[in-house]
Image 1: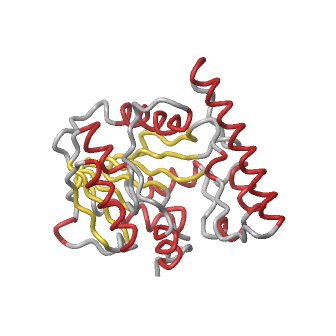
Image 2: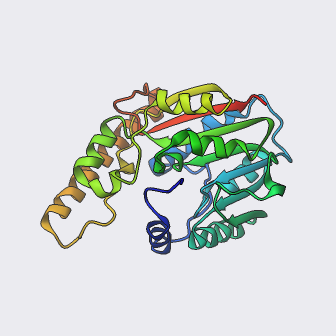
Amino acid sequence: MNQDKAGKTYWDRTWENREVLSAVDPRLPGLNNHINRQFHEYFQNAFSGMTTKGKKILEIGCARSQWLPYFAKEFGFVVSGIDYSEIGCVKAREILSHAGVSGEVMNMDFFNPPAHMLHAYDVVVSFGVVEHFKNTFDCINAYTSYLSPGGLMITVIPNLAGLVGLLQKKLNKSIYDKHEPLDMNMLREAHHAADLTALTCDYFLSTNFGVLNMDGLSRMRTVTRIKMFFCRALSFTSMMVWQIEEVIGSMPSSKMMSPYIICRGKWAK
């Protein structure tokens, strides 16, 4: 049985306590938007060889998604999303509504697609989903059932095989244990096994310690306050690196330091 290591209760609780955010806008200035601008550059390159206007994109794991309206506004995609958290879906719909974008958000399990969604999408994208399942291939293979022939899949996961993963394990192991610590080669191999041609599979960005997650720790404990201070110091270090990158350009990505892994594959069938 394919089971999320985090569990639906965890996600419902997580999304219930999070505010509704604005859609991603890569044109906003400032270091707080640096990561979104880097992702925007990635997506511009990823979609450069295809016509996107009017094409259909599906985000799997779209709870509280800031990306669905972004894909509609920046590239003209017809956007849809699925998630098994009802609360997450409600917040994704609110973000779409606030952005003035039409889109469909469905509360469902991505392992059980209805017939009308089979091979119906030109692009399938996910941000931090497959690493929550023990069998990565099963997830990627399920994703392909939504892709039209020749369709494009973009899979983004946190890089828990590097320093971020080590720190997450030391600082808040309960969150670390909700993940499979995949590296780039493991993610690429799962795509190949699902009949996807991996066009690119790389570690992404030089640093972002802001991804460290302290959820679930008691804020009343001294040790937690020390951990939070340490995380803020690391995040400040990342922002200093981003300030340099804004001037001289992006620094190299690496297995040790990069916060993300992105695999882009084309369905061969």
